[in-house]
Image (cartoon, rainbow, N blue to C red; front, side, top):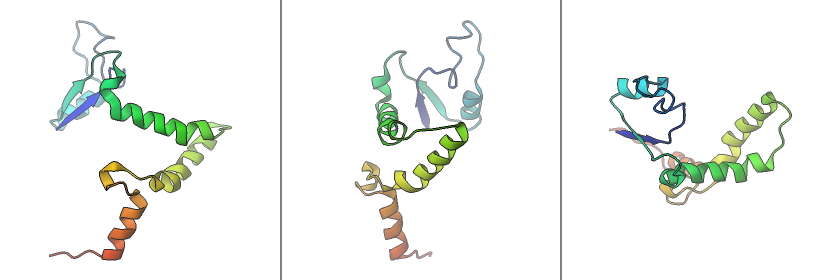
Amino acid sequence: ECVQTDNGMEFTKRFSTPGQVTLTAFQRTLKEHGIRHKLIRPFTPRHNGKVERSHRKDNERFYATHTFYSFEDFSRQLQVYNRRDYNLFPMRPLGWKSPQTVLKEFIKEGVTYV
């Protein structure tokens, strides 16, 4: 397994502690689980296209269309969005169906355990 990230300080201290091997909590967790960590080239967000697209869609669908009056208000609105609105958008990995549609179809068909 492999995780690809940008060079953010939450992911790596590669640029903040030159000459030292200091792992972040994220890197330690990956190491504990035997997961390889791949860093994209600095200043090339196109290498992280899926994440960048996700950030753009989050901005279009949520941040640009809501007003927040406090952190608590932001948190409440985000919970509602994640629970209700986000599950209505069609997604490619689900055959262009929304998570809500896939779940309804799954429940309708039932589950058989052998």
